[in-house]
Image 1 (cartoon, one colour):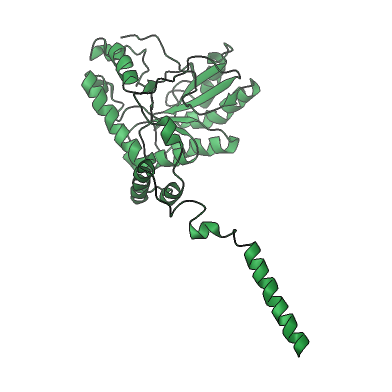
Image 2: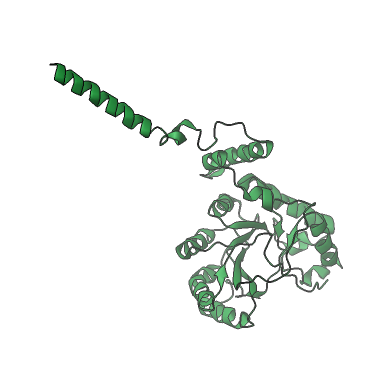
Length: 300
């Protein structure tokens, strides 16, 4: 009887020992490991408030963002005091895939291809398709960079005046802030800074805007190469254009593509374009503040 009692006591002690040894494993259940019960800084509070509101518009990341605010906000948010832009090519051959005109029904298909190859890219978004705004958050959560391409992408509205451009840019800034918690510093002008169609609406507007956006803490990114418009060309034509347009041996290539409506050919061509760059020895990266900034010659 005494022997059985001793065994029982020993078994209990062993169980207690096991429980103590595993005591750190369920820390996340208590909230200590992820900081969810700690006092947040003002920046974190703002981000968490925005993330919480995203739950009502289809974003599934509110809880994750509340527990672990994205550190990109501190580096990528527009800041007029920061002028640390890079205009030098990287040491290694790097291509920055950039997608304009989304989000749309094609954005998820683009994400699927990028995910299959383990590639991060950049999305210059618009407000043309509000039903797909949650895709902005989804792209961001997947590790891609979010930039802004104006809300309407309507040239006669965007370039009607300098004030009209800023009003349009501020509209898409509000949308992006609601999705990712901050306004990014990366922008792309409709038609690029070299477009001349803006002269039909306001003479000299691109010259003025190019300086104003940088003074305000933004940086505009044109492109070094493009595969063409996926709404006007077949996938084969886009791939051929990519090869022709990237044969100059650039170390850094900001490559223009599209994920907007009717850009199915871009999605179809994307795997072959990625394979082409890989064969040419390029690495892939999303735009950040260290990316070599491509500026076209301003045409208006």
